[in-house]
Image (cartoon, rainbow, N blue to C red):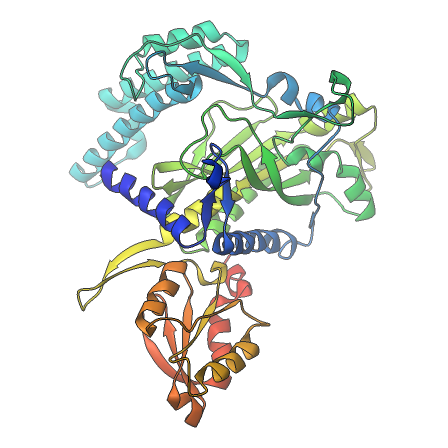
Length: 513
């Protein structure tokens, strides 16, 4: 099963490059580790995902507005946010393989295996007993109780070591759990060291500490420092949200798995400001709404699940991930966090400026609490690309590779294909393209046999192909082909626009939420 998943992932990566979705960055110079460029089709798909998120946030919610904050920020911003002192990952190397790992992720791998064992026991028991009670089984089955105790003990010890910054105890936990390097198979580890994830640079002409600034490791702080600007100029009333899409940069210890974990990536974040004491209500609200947003894409509800955080960040009182079933298994796609008032309170302290909201209904000032939703755009891209990739065997014995991308997100919505490059067919095809190109992104192609062109459009994920033939010149009809069913239908040219619109509309996708 793992080999099948590995092969699928390799095929998706190869397909992404071959068809203009994603290229290794600086490839002519042998590339740059964990940095990628989005090609002509990838940039269109990426922009469509952005549009889907942005419209959901800012059009469907009249109390959410968007901003675009700068990447460079005053360095004290990152002192106030805790990134200068605490934005570290525990790093460990295997002396034999020379590979570097995050110590906490090695330990979490052990926890995941124990959780998988629990799920297998539950699955076996549920098949044996007709009236299976999951809660009772978890609390009474000796083997499951033992597994859960191990998980709790490991989590408690890891959380304690990380909280105290005790890297020696973290290494001892790795030794006690007998964790081996997956490559060398040995347990020959270095000491655990803290590794700050922020990229730094200098601003101005003098390179000294006074001019040291950082590439932002997250987009959220640009929202927090603009809280009052947006609230006052927009006359916003609590509760309200501020949304942003933007680049972030992290010097990851281990950046791997294609675009899943990169050093330069893009986030889609929304910070929702609420009255203190109401944060848990809104936390549950946004958990549900964000899952609905994902599921509306039709990638399969079984591919999503919630994962509550056991180890909360210092600023949070609740946190969970929406995980997606990527080719390498369930991994974080989006985080929903109740951040309390930590960020605004800290920026108020470091800046000396009041960052409070006057509630006219209660006649009082207070620092709002914040509920955050944060989704990685690149991970969203990977979830859509990997799930849409299909290798199909057809009834005639042939095969095709098709990207069944949700139609509203597809890079091109329609391909215009004259059957031949003569007899006035290209001219007619361009007339049709002129009718459609202001409403849909169209792709024109006249090279090769029509069957080969269909296959290319399938591989790119184009929902519809329109073929112009000699009959078109006599009765003003064309053949429209559906990507998913491959069904072909003869329709009049005036009806083409409405047929396509019904399927590829972003508004239609948003209405499913």
